[in-house]
Image 1: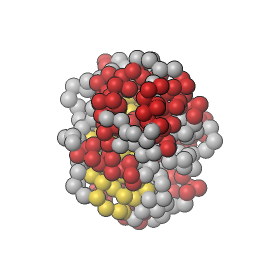
Image 2: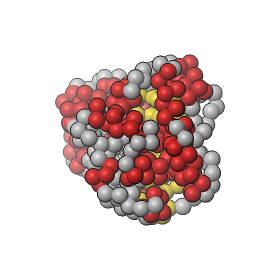
Image 3: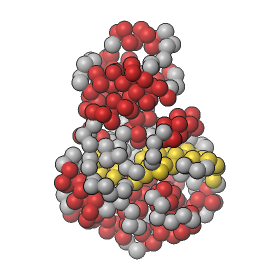
Length: 330
């Protein structure tokens, strides 16, 4: 690692092959914590290149514990995190609304690193048992319409850097990798990113695949549709900005989507919103994100139809029932 660090400190970039080999070695536990921390901070001081991200991604997908869902087409809704906004768990809530509307969701997530509560924190608090058992995950998809994939159980490298990431408490290039390495290889992916620069890198990578994708970024910095500003949305066909009014009927304020100061707060708020008891602003943000997820799945072509499907899923109680069914299977 010393040789690699000296190379990077000379402002040089990694080739795809070099990046691949480094991630393989991280997965094997070849480097100590100090070396890994130094390596991760390099990408806080400069932008990651497409070649570097491609190499890292290739290694993680090759080494991952793959999930075979028997050809079921699924969606993942996930954000990079690292936007520093500490919102409630919008992506995870949106997944349950999509599943309640009849979609199939293989949600990839992890514990919060740069936020109070990540998807894994909330799911664990709700009683979900993390597993990489194929039979369990297939059963959840079949009977609840959704399964949850806790990243460290599927990616050795994530397990080896988890403690360091928590100690650093800031986003690293692993935030950028998380949405790219779902071990169920979903056909449909909706990814929120914390910057337009990362959106461009993701767009390039997804154009090389056969996935149906949506990449989005709220222009005031959120890695999801926040309705606090316009949202840039990039998919297989177009790229354009959408106003809060177009996506969620009206704008909301940043304080309206704050996630609280503890995992307990986040979990309580999660259940409250899923029961249809959230504020207008909280509900509107979740519905807008779920509607784009439903559109990414191709369930409806028109956005308004997708939005109404999300409303029906939440207001009918189907989204909440999806969570209840999932927890009963644990």
